[in-house]
Length: 455
Image 1 (cartoon, rainbow, N blue to C red):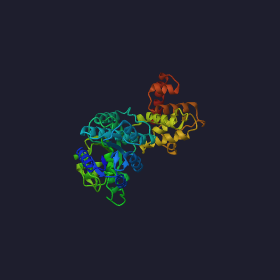
Image 2: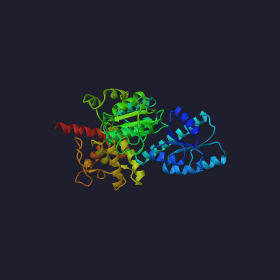
Image 3: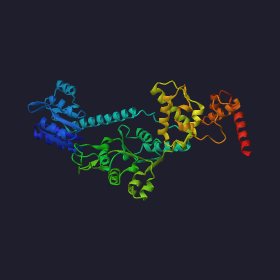
């Protein structure tokens, strides 16, 4: 942590700095509240060690002033004049902890451990709040696809290790959701899972966001930041779309992975990092290496364990389950009384190619829940592209109320229900007939289609 020591006695400041720096922290000192306020206005600090008797001032009066400048400061009050009343008052005005002088190294270490644990918890809460505010359905890794089950099994096994994991897949296939699931099953799950979107910023800003910077490091750097590597300390750093990472930053990321070291922009001091890295990309990194756009050594360093998320069109057996899960989520969120999908709507969804994958499915279902007129989502509640989608060979576009026979309606309805990917028993239940009857009808339909194909 970056710690400011405020005490009017030079010996106390120097002794405290030596003890804290020996434990790996960065320290600065101030002999008065006025000097401390100037430093806090100029630089970023994680914590303050403040003396109760500060010249003519009381440390209890200084605490609110410091918190007004930086509300997240963890302030530890230390003094030789310890009492229960003083401790209670210090906590009341915003102090994090209280340390009586003279203190031992073990006592100091214990306070620092409590501060670190509290900061990790704050990061975890912030991460959870961010995920809740994103209004996403909870991750569920059940699947009917054997190939995808192998992906989930590999990810689950790798989660408990400290190895770097590379997640491949098209945009919208759920790479970030899988990354968070791996984090939640890892040894770093008590820490935060911090996401860095590699394509989102310029090289300078991305480097600063990743590693942090000091004041004046570049144009616009009016203060200090610590970066997401530090925010992920003890947790997971998720590098989304790493294929977009600028070449100039790649050596620094390689150093972070190999040596667990990094430097803030404009700061020569080498810092240690305890983070687990998960990377994801929708690009072919091998092709980027050949094109000179991605470092070969970095590619091999992140390619320790690789899992590939299939496109939604490659896992159509899961589509009904995924669609139902999203429907349940948005029905609760919107307070609608929608009970499911009509067979025609599900059939239309299953013959669609889903270029936007799970992200597109989420948006389509949310839209349908908002616009649906009845108790079931129908084709008309889906975007126009679903109504215009090409129908499977051998089927006909039969609409309710059109000039067709009941036999034609029954044939198309049975085909649509079977296209949902449910079992024969489930299909029979939906159709309200006996499974044996459904088997006979399906056999007859198959024979009719075969005869039509030979004409």
